[in-house]
Length: 112
Length: 114
Image 1 (cartoon, each protein chain N blue to C red):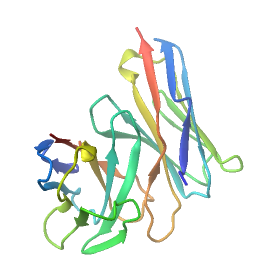
Image 2: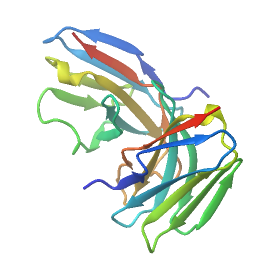
Image 3: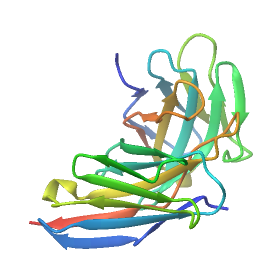
Image 4: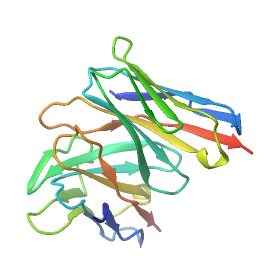
């Protein structure tokens, strides 16, 4: 079964507003990562949060992790048009040999 | 330190031909992951390899698809007798060891089957 599920599927906001995307997963994890993908391009790693962390910041990004609810959120503050992209969460279970599973993504549109 | 390099960036094949996609991981990385992304969809895991070993191929179609990561050289994703449904973007990622650090992605290979 799919590990990560982003919510909402699509989000449209005005420039300057904050954007919040959520990710839920089903099994226990070791790490949760957020990636951005601009249309037709590769993936860019944004931030990794470990299962023993609750919050992490990177510039205008804030990620939270609630392992009891098996969910994470990505907050982009003061959004810019350049933030328009698809955002994916990805999880791994931290076993000796494991793969990263991606959710279907949230498509964010920031309107200038 | 170059990032993950995938080539070609774009590949056009006629139905029935073979497609070979290459992925050179970051220097020092020995773990490679292949993902497929269909238009307007997320990334689907295909296969996870370490040097000379396939660790997990649970996402690989049973037929026509194969992957390798030899001791020397890039990882290769091979699709035999391509069909239109194989048209997609194929991404590879590498990591140094277990994914306790982030996976670094290549720019992808966009395969178009005509």
